[in-house]
Image (cartoon, rainbow, N blue to C red; front, side, top):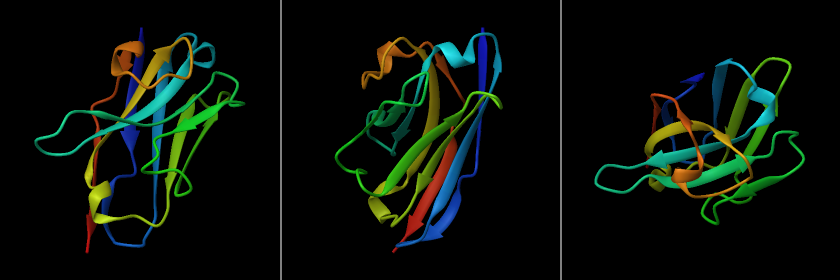
Length: 123
């Protein structure tokens, strides 16, 4: 079993930056692809970014490409999401996800989920 705990969310003005972190406990963290998803009120949970077990492959949603960067540190069992040039439409609860075999976008490919951290971007 893998437990995931997100941190780093908050309130920021449009154009600002935030760095989300996800701390993982449990076995085999470095064996899995990891991802970030988000869910805005009244909307379905959507893919944001994912990273392979080695960190060598990354994938981004078109809406965040060029603004967000996902990274991982397998020695520390952590995954990060650096978010720059934030927009009001980035406002959502952000979830860390793990346990995927590949760098994939569907939520069903991920077996483990954190509780989420709120990101609010004001205009």
